Length: 79
Image (cartoon, rainbow, N blue to C red):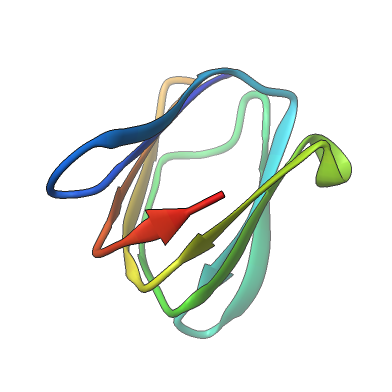
């Protein structure tokens, strides 16, 4: 699936991934290939990609999953 992490001033990450774990407003959740459509609020925390191969700290935001495309609109993010 294709993941993009975007902040108001830059694109932090984009590329193909196998899995991504997010700090949802109601707790952690993971998205895999073929995941059902989803929109969720994110709280401050860590996005973990491919079981820990990459990690990004986010300050909150929104994630949308649709047709194997995942877009994160983060208030702020760092590697």
